[in-house]
Amino acid sequence: MEREPLKNEGLEEKSKNFLEEIIEEDLKSGKHAGRVLTRFPPEPNGYLHIGHAKSICLNFGLAQRYGGKTNLRFDDTNPVKEDIEYVDSIKEDVRWLGFEWANEFYASDYFEQLYEWALVLIRKGLAYVDDQTQEEIRLTRGTVTQAGKNSPYRDRSAEENADLFKRMRAGEFKDGDKVLRAKIDMGHSNMLMRDPILYRILHTDHHRTGDKWCIYPMYDYAHGQSDSLENITHSICTLEFDVHRPLYDWFIEKLEIFPSHQFEFARLNMTYTMMSKRKLLQLVQEKVVMGWDDPRMPTICGLRRRGYTPESIRNFAEKVGVAKRDNVIDISLLEFCLREDLNKRAERRMAVLNPLKVVITNYPDNQVDRLDAVNNPEDETAGKRIVHFSKEFYIEREDFMENPPKKFFRLAIGQEVRLRYAYFIKCTDVVKDSSGNIIELHCTYDPASKGGNSPDGRKVQGTIHWVSAKHAINAEIRLFDRLFSKENPDDVEEGQNWKSSINPESMKITQGFVEPSLASAKPLDKFQFERMGYFTVDYDSKPGSLVINRTTTLKDTWAKISGL
Ligand code: ATP
Ligand code: MG
Image (cartoon, rainbow, N blue to C red; front, side, top):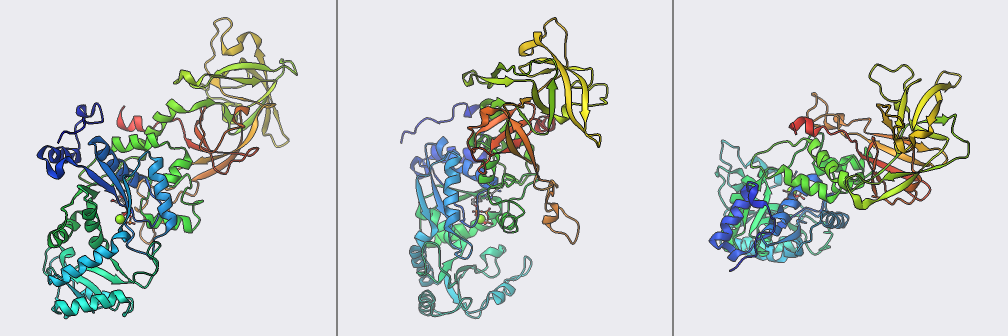
């Protein structure tokens, strides 16, 4: 069969990852008739995080590259923890990342087929109903060095097992009374092959199947067969499933069904981040954060609210690559990808986060200058806008020092700076309140320096930003820092848990001033506030009361680390 040419130009230049090599081998050898079908299989028990994004980009990316397709399959085999809220959020996040699935499937769609296959295993003498408690089963599993013990119920006849299993389904037994186990080998060197549990009784409603079932398949029993039912060619999962692969293959072999194959890659770990859904849920439930989409969360919806773009996340996933061994990625790589993207797309604006008022004593009282400002030096099509300048304006408190050290090139008494797009100004004196705090600066300006150009070749070293007081609009600005103060939040002193790594100062709120052009900004609009970083309008923002998140500062720590 003729194949479409590879989609990603330039791919050849980059060395291929091991999954690309495997797929290209398979395509060459004609395995699966040149077909590539991957799947992304989330369990709907939480919101997706940046680790899932890596997996999404990998599964969808490989399929795109080789003219294949990807299914979205919800691994909904544990009704206790799953919910439709999570299903909806997962779909939204995958789409937002820029991917569209070929089919939306649910493991629960396969419950009937999985049940039938369990009966096939029973008939073949490869599965049995065990009356032992979960605890007894655990205790008789043995250890890595010691074989386990056979269950006293292991030799039940196929007829008896089939009868008991049907009655399990019919609801005749209570939770925990019985389980269905595969009959493999209690002395197997791989503990997962020691008669693993296939079904347990759970009298719990399922978010899709309601009360139809009171027995539910275990992950290992459902996952591979679901792949097989969908004719998945390359089932990609993270390294910890390596030890599950023999079982994955065992079911496929014994049931004589489509031979999907599992490939493992190293999961994404990132510094200053936690990627356990269970722990993220705790942060939400204990109100450490504002919700799953809190801008400090590593969730996809949190990153979106923070101001991340799909492009920056996809680019990050590409840069991280596909490893065969566990590693930890520096979070500054993610921030680097974000800045790289926002630098191209975010329009520049001026905003003052920590305001100090300045009055130009020699500027006419009612004069207003309309000054040209470039929206984005990286993008000509972004055009220009007008910024208004008047007698009174705000600057950043940190841009003035009463007793400056030698190399302080910003504003100080007697020192001249350039106001971005506007004029050269020189500070003449400061106004203080009764407790000695500086509340206002008095300056003079040079009318001949309009536009910020030197009138006579004299140089000023510093350029600072400002917002005209008369024109400014208020904004609540949320400054975020890392949610955890440790590179590895789990690395804690004895007797403490990961929660002691939470950074108590991860959010600071300031009242700032922004240009009036932001009045019509909508949630998720992104800007670079000159000198201050990238900012994104928050969902909490309303006309007349702007709320803006700091997405990231301008300072790039990745370049330093990587030696770029
Ligand atoms: P759970 O503990 O709930 O199983 P999980 O993170 O494994 O959590 P799943 O919903 O089972 O969540 O994951 C869906 C897919 O995403 C799986 O294929 C899984 O291997 C992959 N995945 C999850 N976490 C990461 C990660 N940190 N890096 C890469 N892939 C991941
Ligand atoms: Mg999982």
